[in-house]
Image 1 (spheres, rainbow, N blue to C red):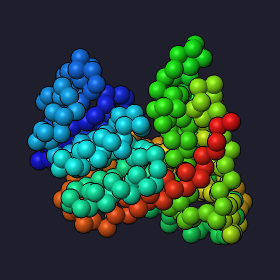
Image 2 (cartoon, rainbow, N blue to C red):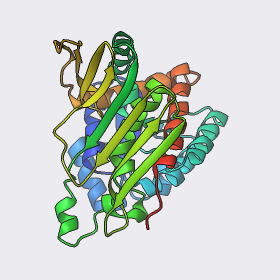
Image 3 (cartoon, rainbow, N blue to C red):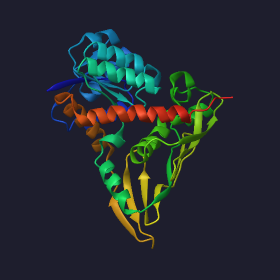
Image 4 (cartoon, rainbow, N blue to C red):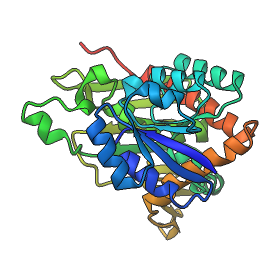
Length: 320
């Protein structure tokens, strides 16, 4: 059995714990929160064995794997400390803010023979391989549109004059880091690094990006990425070839996938997926990686994170 602990008490942490319940080799050990009261309440709610009273206590504990779901600004320092203290680490996206930081942590993990990778549903769903196989059937691809625009549940608080973490640039959050990353992953995985990136971002009064777009220019195709936390999209993402089109209802979960031939005839390839299953895939990968730290898939995940972060750095513009 692998004892794991979590950092953070948000809904995403609850989703991970729920998914991990179906992974037989994992047992929920502890919860760390900056608020001991919240930590204890969360531990009781989720069935964790204990709540850590300090980050140092977590570092010195015998928990083996830590799922990090703290604010983005904390990811690098917390992951580094956990690795230095012999913990395997699965960190929420974006795993770090820069490709250099991620590369440093990957090197540290390999040096210590530990597992370190990013919690991103795209890499761990079987739908990824389905998508990669199906694009072979749509002919020459010239145009791609990936969109993730979802009105934030914290937007009303922002309008009311509050400053939620997700709209606080000091937390290294904003629309690109929170939602845009889901569009970059399939772009880089399916088509490689673009020749040129042409970005546009709109900034809120807080200084955080509320929405944005980027044209990823390739020699033979154009991949358009749009993302927003201040508006709700009702459309789909599309990969358009001269022999057919693939649509995705959810670019983050990689589901509701359909194929349309040139006559417009529709074939459903994959329906809506339960998020518990998707989060469980990440937990399952963690166990597989711990049992096989030399896994080629682990290295692929680490290298993909670095490539994605490198592209995202080019998608950021200066806030005037």
